Structure formats: structure tokens, C-alpha cells
Length: 333
Image 1 (spheres, helix red, strand yellow):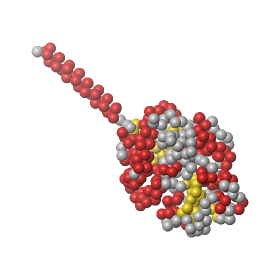
Image 2 (image 1 turned 90 degrees about the horizontal axis):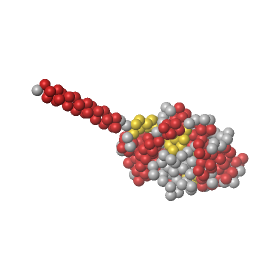
Image 3 (image 1 turned 30 degrees about the vertical axis):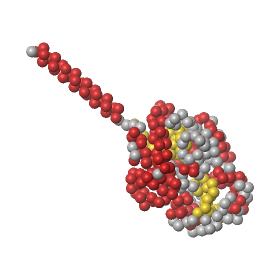
Image 4 (image 1 turned 90 degrees about the vertical axis):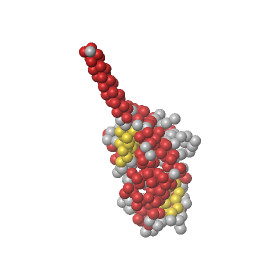
């Protein structure tokens, strides 16, 4: 009887231990990988797919717990990602290039928007080329990337820059000058400022810098290079969910904005502007060198051209070896 009791007791202990191990294993398997993802600025429409991926559980399906936070400019976000405060961010590639040139451990892993820079004018007095800016007043803040590349646009469009009148307001004030018609035009990104001035009653016309041969990549997903190297599968899973979200948002932009507002209820008042910004975004998802490639793919030619313009017009001291700037290795197949 004693022997039987000991055997039963031992069996119970073994079953208990096995159950504890099974529970621990299940808890470990279910524990998601946390990712802090930083946007380049306060929320605008192109950001909606990131919130959609959270809202629809696309990141969760990949075993990720993603926290999307707003930023205060790509230069600041690049530093935060380089320092490891955020593992990844939505960063302007020109800011990232400057960071890499200064030694920051950053790498672009997915391109999102390219050739967003544009010239916006009034629909009742449209300006259709750089040449037509001669004798007109244009507004831009000197530190903006659109301003830094404006000389390239003027040269490419055979405009005499000396005949273009420039007002240089503080960052953020050019929209007001345009709305007051104190400026005939202003520099912008098609997926941001056009919707902002339209929401305030403006009727607009615009042309893109790329229409005149000035091609620059804009924002994409940038990772801390050390994090990406040590966690390649995590980056791949993040990009897989992100690509799916952008594809969903292109098919149903209103649903994507609804998801954003559910995540950020304070943005409900800006819904129409956010929707217009998102609707203007798909035309920026591909370049001449990435036609027919999957969403997010990056072409060496685009990096060479973007960096060349930065060296010539944007004050970049020297070009960085292009293989240090980007990789397509983490993109889902």
C-alpha cells in the first residue's frame, strides 16, 4: 500500500511539473515582441496604414506588440532610432543619409513615398512649370528640404532663379501666406500640405519636382542597424504586416482613416484632411526604377540620385557608400 501511495504521489508530482512546464512554454510562446515605432511628425494621412496594422491585429498576427508614437521631425527621429530609444521609425531618407554620414547606425529597410516635393499654386492662377514662377512670389522656409532642392528644380526647369521672388517665413507659416494670397505659390509635399490648405478653402493646382527631372526619395521605414542585424526575423515580420496594411489602405482609404481615428480619437476633427492626404499618397509609392516591384522595394539608382542631389544642393559634405544606406533583405518575398 505504501509503495502504491509513493508511486501515485510521484506520478502526481511529475504531472504537476509537466503541467507547469507546458504552461510556461505556452506563456513564452505567446509573449509578443515589443516594437517602438516612431513617426516623423504629428499624424498625417500617410501614417494611417501603421495605425490600421495595429487596429486590425496585423502586427499581433506576426507576434509583435507595436506602439506607434508621434515624432518631432525626421532629424530628431533618426537620432532616437540610432540611439535605440525606438527600434524603427518613419523617417525622411535625406535625414537618414545625413545621420549615416555622421556615423549613426541606421539603415533603410522599406521605401514608402518618393517624389512628394511639389509646387502648389492657386487653381485660378495655376503655375505649371518652374519657368512660370519667374516674376511670381513663392513662399518657403529656408531649412525645409523642399527649399533646399528648389535651386535644382529651377535649374532643371530652365527658370531664372534671380527673377523669382522668395518670401522666407518661419516653418509652418507659408500656408497662411498662400491662403492670404500674399504668395502665388509655395513649396510642399503632395501628401501633406495640399490637403491642409484645401481644408481651409483653397482651390489648388500643383506640379511635382519629379515632373522636371528632380527625383528624390522621401519617407520610409528606417531601422536601428544593430537591431536589424540581431533581429532579422522581427524586422521581416514588421514589414510583412506593414505592407499588408498599406495594400489594405489603398483599397479602402476611408476604412484606414477610421482605424487611425479609433487609435487616435483626437484626430476625428481632422478626418477629411487625413483622408485627402492618404488618397494623395499612392501616386508616391513607386518610382521609375521600381515599377513592377513589390511595395517597399528600393532601387540603387534612386539612392544614387537622391544622395547626388543632397551633395550638390543640400549641403551633404560627402557621399556615403550606397550599400551602407539601405537593404531589401528584410522585405517579405
